[in-house]
Amino acid sequence: MMTTFAGPLRMAALLGLAAFSIPSHAVVVFSSDFESGLPASISPGDAVLTGVQGFSGLGPAGNQFSGSFLRSPTGNVVTLTLTNLPTHDALSIGFLFAAIDSLDGTGTFPSGDFFRIDIDGVNRFRESFANALDSQVQSYVAPAGGELARKQDLGFGGPGSFYRDSAYDFNVDGRFQSFAHTASSVTIAFSIEGVGIQPLTDESWAFDNLAVTAFSTTPPIPEPSTYALMLAGLGAVAWAQRRQAR
Image (cartoon, rainbow, N blue to C red; front, top):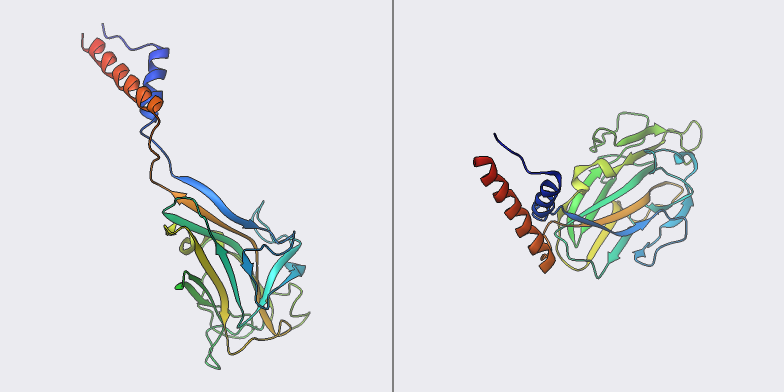
């Protein structure tokens, strides 16, 4: 008759083998909802903290526009600089993005309005955004769940304005998720390309709930006790197999 190993033996084997299955390790290295002022790691240029107005409540549960966000005129660069990052091989960026007032899309004059993100001086994202109620071309197409509002009166263009506001959840855009990065520091620059800096009363953009997460998929070196547990688990499995064979 074939026998199986008992509960304690099964548990020992599973615990030992579990040492081989080490998942990737994630550490949130920066997070701000801009409710407690401007973080020291952000260089805002001409950006200012502004009440979210009609954007309030947009976004998935637990990650919604609220209170204040960091609002920047086009042509301005907002820079996030992080140092002393833990050992990692990938980063992710997440935030809620507000496209405000008279952004002109791809455009032909003077050059359109393109939101861009540069990581350590290398461009990672560049897409145009359009808020006019006519047929302006917008290059950005949000993935499923990414578009929170499109050309709506959210408090910045004014009721009946030809230009409205739009909102997006960039947390669901794969271009911001788990991209390769290993350096101990990172500089992330956010901007909308434009000819000179436009006043906030003309056109602008903002973000809320900004977070950066570092991922490490390299297993740590096991402690001696972990090696012992691994060997015990393997031994338990081998012993059970011999009993079953008999």
